[in-house]
Length: 125
Image (cartoon, rainbow, N blue to C red):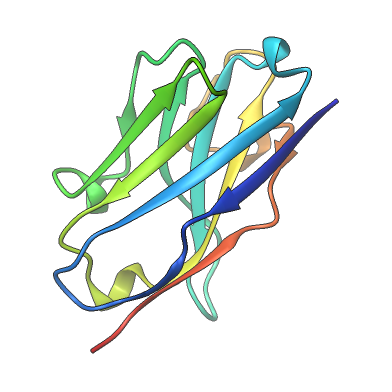
C-alpha cells in the first residue's frame, strides 16, 4: 500500500509563491504517475497537474500553465507543486494522488488510486 502526505499549504498574498510537497511512503515502487488536484470552496474537484513517477511528461491544466510547476525528487519519493504568481481563485484544498498504472486520462480523478488528505492554500491580502 502507498500512503501520501501533503504539506506546504498556508496563507499567501496575491502574486506570491508557495511550494506544496507530497511525500509517498510504502510501496512507492508501484507508482506510475502522480497528480495534484484542488477543490475550491463550494466547487468540484479539478485537475491541476500530473507527472510520471520517473519525472517526465508533466501535464498542466490551462489555468495554471506558466504559473505552476510540478516536479519529482527521485531520491526522496517526493513530488512538488511550485506555485508562482498566485491568484485569489487559486484558493483551494490541494491534494496529491497516485496511479499504479498509466492514466488513460491524466485529468480524470478516477485514473488515480490513492489520495492524500489535502492541504489548504488561501490566497488573500
